[in-house]
Image 1 (tube, helix red, strand yellow):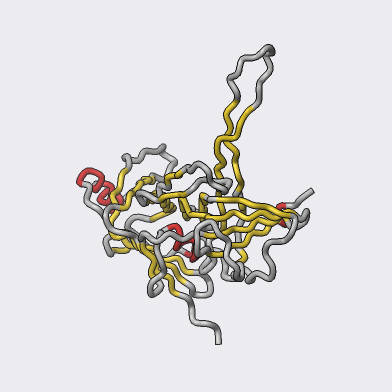
Image 2: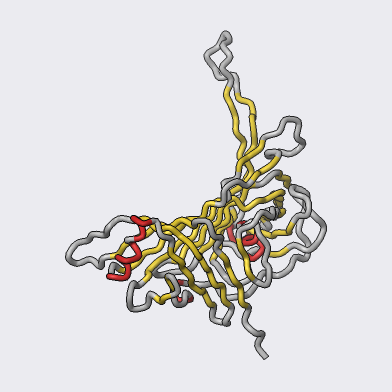
Length: 306
């Protein structure tokens, strides 16, 4: 029998998609690793001298799942890079066309079962900043291959990062079109969603368990922002009619001074007029869609303690 506290995950960047390189693995800080192979089957339609099913045949195998985590500085930079199909350049990340894949090890350490998911692409990424609670991240992975063993795959990995995880209290001043919303339109919650619109290429005659390739198409970046209803919130909402993009920027800073700044230079907003009862606070939830200009994430590590 196995304990969830003993499911340990490690990651290493690949040079060739689907081929695990030699080198030192990094230990992931996760709240859940749902990676799994899923066999797709078709049942037989044969008619014989019995009413019993004639069984099934495997037609394909999908390999993937969610990596869920409490967001912290420096812990997921390589996965963010893969989600954006970009590269950190002078500590700035933007959407690009560079494919980054990984091998991810999932070890059930207490029962001695170890799996490796190869050619792991970030299919979607979600960041949730609640009204009250922890900032959470979810990376949905699409993989090319899977193997497992009773022999440990990862030996002497790098230790996990130790930066503090983040909460809603770590979010700094939110700017819309360069102006602070403090005192004008209180923001109570936000989400960010990135979908690389991966398309799966199936290939006959492959030695892999999974598909031949995952191909990124449109980078669809959306999200939501919840605002206290006010004159300023109404002015922002009015952009739903004109389709005039707005710019949104905000930092998230941990207790050590490490900071990510999220900048969305052009997003289109949509939403309905809010309503509520006489004992309710009126809020408006606006959905947004990135238009034409790439968002950026800027990382700023705190100076090391003397």
